[in-house]
Image (cartoon, rainbow, N blue to C red):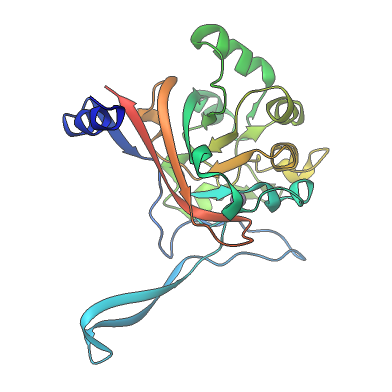
Length: 257
Ligand code: MN
């Protein structure tokens, strides 16, 4: 049997489960909020064109407005100044949009400390238990933050000192960019960097290091709890927005049961 026929049979027989890692897109989908003087992104919104009415008696359709970085979305290297000469979202090779994934679960640490930062030692410890990070694959960083993703305030978790959400250290970001074989990092939070990463040196180290190394980001993922530590395959499909810095995407995982 061909590999693809075997895959379709396995999905039909539920030996391979298809798990949706995507948050629904609507007006309540949380978006990042930057302080003045920085520009901010649009929330998602629908603008109805017709709905079986005089504007279109047999058809329903909408226009929509969204940011490239709204909801579950893909960060292309050109999103950051360090990657300004690298791929835009339409230039990402489609073969890289289907990739193996490692799922590292730090839900307990993030629950105890919303400013929890992933360090290289955490990843080394995980590798000693589960094996190496997949070559050309995603590191999916679970923090339990998807449980907050229906509420903008809980999701951003901002106080007077700024947002408090988990992320990674400067050293870890550099290591993932330069040493690790991964093609990118996927997170449950509003962005790949920690909420406090504006205060790091350099600021926003995950964006700066990974995108500058031609790697990718996936954010606002859900259902990572249903993935094994190793063995899932992620299909992440951003829209090919010509020249775009990123795009909302449908992210799916294939998991063998
Ligand atoms: Mn983004």
